[in-house]
Length: 480
Figure 1 (spheres, rainbow, N blue to C red):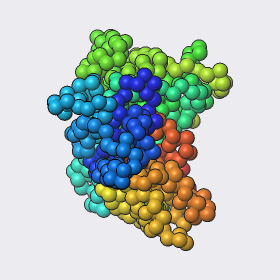
Figure 2 (figure 1 turned 30 degrees about the horizontal axis):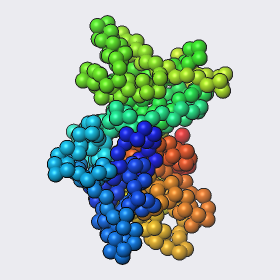
Figure 3 (figure 1 turned 60 degrees about the vertical axis):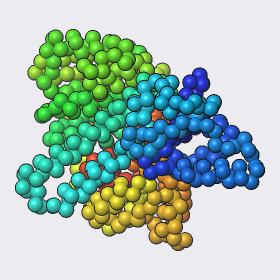
Figure 4 (figure 1 turned 180 degrees about the vertical axis):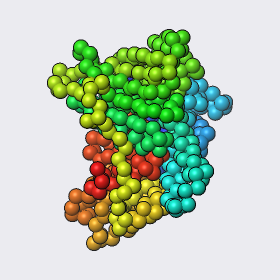
C-alpha cells in the first residue's frame, strides 16, 4: 500500500490505516488522490497531527477544499484504526454499514493489524534467546532447555499463522498481483536455506537445499512464499528425519521438489490431498490447513502446477512446476544427484566470536529495539539503538565512530525507510558498512524493494540462531 498498490479497476476505496501506536502505517492510492491529502501522507504521521494540519489550513482561509473529508472510523482488533472515505456524506447508520462493501471486514482488519501483531512476537523470540544465553551452563538441566525450545517453537508457530492469514487475505481480496519476471531460482533457494535451516536444526532435524542454476519466469517473492508454505507444512508434521529441497528439469518447466522422510500418506489420504489441491482457490481451507491453502492459492495466481507423491511410512514429495526461461543455464543440479557435495546445513555460528563488535540498530518499535539490544549485548556486542534515521544520526554525532554492522527495520519513523537509513549512515562513516533489513512486513512489493537493495533480509519474529548466523556471515566471521 502506501500509495503504491495497483488500483486499475478503482475497486479499492480511499483508506488510511493507523497502527496501535496511533501512527499512519498504510494508505491506498485512492486516499493519496484526495485533495485533502495530496502530498501530505507520510508513514509515521499521527492522526492528531494530520487533523491539526488540515484544521490549520482551514483556520487561515487557505485551501478550504482541503478540509477533512467525511469518513468512517473502523477500530482494529489488534489496536489502531482504519479511516474509510466513501466519497459521499455518511448516513446516520454509516458506522454500522460502512464495512459491508469491503467484502470480508474481519479478514481485512486482521491484515491491516498484522504488522503490529508481529512486533510483540519478534520481541518475545529475541528475549527467549537472551534468556537462553544468560542461563548458560545451567541449561544442562534438560527440562529447562526443553522448555525454552518449546517456547521458541510456539512463537514460530504463531508467526507462521499470522503470516499465513495475512497472505491469504491479500490473495483472496485481489490485493496480491504477480510481477512476472526472469530471474535465477537459486536466489530463492538460498534465502530459504538461510531462514529455515536454523529452525530444523533447533528441532534436531536436517534441512538440505540443492543449488540450481536454472533461470525461471515467475514472481520470485510469491514463489518464495509458496515454497515457504510447503516447508512450514513439512516441518509441522516432522518428528525426526530430514527434508530436501531440490530441482529437476522436465521439458520447458523446472520441477522444484520438496522431499520429506516423514510419515507419508495412505493411498486414500493421497487421493484426497490431490483432489483438494485441484479445487479452485478459496475452497477446502479447513481440510488442507493454512499452509497448503496458501500454497494452492499462490500456485493458481502464478499459473504453476502442483504434483504430490507419497507412500505411507516413507515420506512425501510435493513438486511445483515453474516455467523455464529461454536464458536457462545448461548445468542444473538434479535433486536425485550427488547430494553430499551440495548439502546446505545451517551454519554453526555459535563458535564465532562477535564480541567487541559495534552494531547500530534502527527499530521504531521500543519493545523490539530493547529485545535486540539485550540479545546483541548478551553476545558481547556494543549496541547503539535508535528509532529512526534522524535519531541514529543524532546519537552517532557529527564525527561518528564507525560501526561494524547496521541492522534496520524496513518501516521507520520519519521520511527515510530502512534501506535509505543504512545507505545514509554508511555515507556518514565514509566507508562501506554491511547492513541487514529486519522486517515484519510481508507485502510482496515492499519485500521486492528490500531484496533489490542488496541487503540481506530477515523476517520478524526471527529465531536468535538465525539472527546470529546472519550477523556472523555479514561480519565475515563465519567459521565455515
